[in-house]
Image 1 (tube, rainbow, N blue to C red):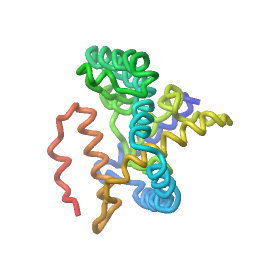
Image 2 (tube, one colour):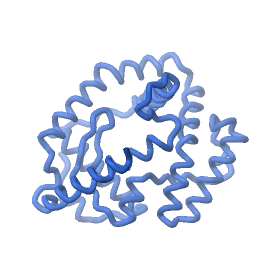
Image 3 (cartoon, rainbow, N blue to C red):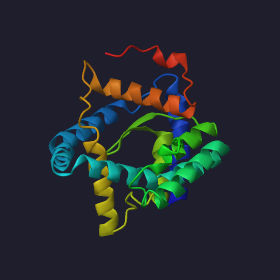
Length: 231
């Protein structure tokens, strides 16, 4: 299955890169429709569930769940630090996972931060960028939101390596854990006001692309990304 996704990635990346100079968003028409679908789904389904969850579940329990899900993703981050030849990041993430999984009771408590061990999050999309693979065309994925051809392909190994993400299997425990992860994440964003303006879609797109550039370059931003004005 991964090989099939890789072949699709190579085909679409070549198509998107050929038109990137003329149009950085060649799938804009489809992307806007998917964006509208995602926002409608959030307004009518995901946000109400998250609000109910936030009202019922105490804050300290929500923090525990957030710590738990962050800890489950730490091995994936450690592996990507290794791929990117960042030994300090690999050691840091590995140490965090060991400490939080033991002293932190399977990650419910973030004891590693108490010891001064900071997070050094890396993902497969960032690793592909470090390896010199261009982002390709901007892409809005149903349910997931803003992405790109490169980052969309990077989601595949995430599903196979993160235990809290669904793997396209008929497994009730996987689905339940995935659902809890989504609701807990959305509940943590309730205090953030929805972005608005003359063109919400363009704001999300530009913000996402700039954030990914920032992450891949470890905080170094290409000034040309700020040429376009936000509404």
